[in-house]
Image (cartoon, rainbow over the protein chains, first blue to last red):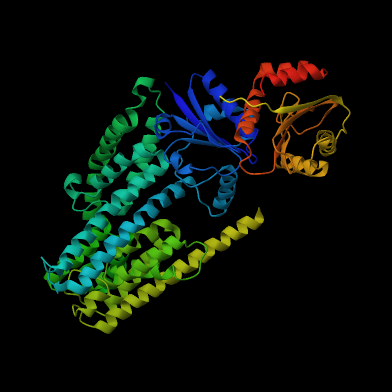
Length: 480
Length: 151
């Protein structure tokens, strides 16, 4: 049968805790629910909820005036936040709300705090959509750090510049580290998608989002030359989240409810998301990649357009950092090495380092928009930038797209254009300062200068836009 | 279950000031008479709780409560008013019956007594019980009987 659980707690713990509990129980039972309400009162916790009861409950009603013990038990459940007064006055409303209330993700503690964070969030322009995105980003950061630093260290200490790129000798500790780093990087994509979806619709959304994200990043399944990168993962996360949320709202016979989140939703969700990517997005991505490649070929035919070519290449490198657009630019550079025009690879190599270096350096500037979490990601982004791993910027760009993307796209474009002007060549299919240190470029000083100019431009734009966003929030807040 | 008795102290048709805080002062004075507690402290603590959120939960009944020094076990005071007092209740109705829970000011106060109080609080959500209280509003001995059924 349908059931819900609740917790009640008031400041003194003598009257309202129990009055609210009684009301919820009576109202729920009158509606045909099995109800259990835990009371956290002056005489301690009574009618404590068991893990099984919480698991079986369709939703949770919290009638609490102060923070309660054991909030973490309700992460992933639909949770109604209210006060003891509301539960006593209008318990029916709370019970009705339970059916379509949002899933609790472990952020807020009780209603007062919710109101406070919501007020704060509106001033920070944080809509639910942004919060869901940030949930994905914060779960992804450790994976990016592990992946990026393991790969960066293995290349820095054990890599050799060859015509095939930076090669780490097999059967060495460096190659082991490199492979471990690659695992971190490949997990980053499903984690990002999975936890965006989780923030929207809870546990049931994890599998469709994570499997869907892997599908969208497996070129062999998509029938394209490249996966959709982190932008595709974000798209999958939202799609799987809202799809699951919608499926959760279906009127399902009670007998089937238990199998919905573990069987029906994951299966249907994964099938729908995967099919959408394979059949709807596969060919547009292939078409886009071909079109971009044709554009680059056209621009490279005449020396007069070389600066434009540089701008476009740089922008392409940073626009999706590892996605199809980045791939086209990178492969175009790689092809130029064998074609005898390694200036193009040189320009790409200049751009590659700009997104992680500049977005990382930007976190060193004081800004109310930069969280401690981002500062940590910033340090590792700088290290990754030195080794030419563009992906290091992904968490930072995703957290503040409006500020970071304009910076890195323009900055990378500038770096590549300057590289073109200086006729930098790079004989190794890899980028960042490391290829210069390893002697793959024709002019180390000018190569570094190109990167530096791009980084300065990008960092300046990011810092400026962040300051403007903070000032804008403040003026909005004072206007209110 | 081990039943313990909770002392009740019933006063019917008391003339109280029309303002809530002042009415709580009168209640504190009445309930601290013949008890080793301070009327001022009880009043202050009742008001402090009241100001956090109204204890008037509807149907003309309020449940002010507070901890106070000097008690060894909790008791329940019932004061019914001659004239209803505006209480800022959940349903906006003025209050004519105050069920006052007074507890010793020490942590881990006897759990059995606290349990009895929580039982009373739950009972207040029962329409029949509220009706019985209202019927006994002017009859002290009947009021004591109604409460003794629970406590």
